[in-house]
Image 1: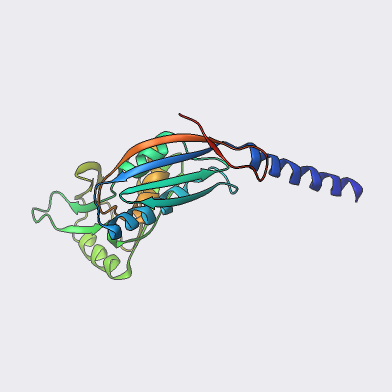
Image 2 (image 1 turned 120 degrees about the vertical axis):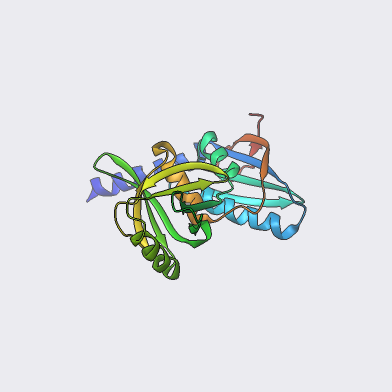
Length: 221
């Protein structure tokens, strides 16, 4: 019993030490809109995206708005810079349609996606998509009439995927990830929704934290 208590005590000490010493960071973004409602929407969407890629359960992200600028503070660890850049620079406006049907009918968009996640099956990275029920019914009908056709995904005006329709699918389906290295982040973006406007990075600075209770100190990146 004594040994177990000792181990628990060591574990708690390590966790507290990690909280104190883990690197923290501040990211400041400028929103290309002066409308408070738009800035707030950008903040909410990006907070959802950043929170989904926290490096550990101890990591947190908070934010403040000053005019058209949003300051995000990452405590006890932050996602890598390239992940953050991908998440805030991608609007997330996805349109999926059959490119060889001639009609250009959109099958679904980002707004039609309820859930999105990434995973590996048989050494292949996949995106798992769940659409809204009414959209799933429409996609089931369209896909049943399009066996052998090609479904194209266009994200923010760029083609990211051409997938052959091999069978009927509806509300739930999976597809090979366009970029395996960015599958998780793409899923996060599709589930979080479309940013209403673009943002630009103003600054990114590490924050050095001392002992518990002491104020953080910003240092230039």
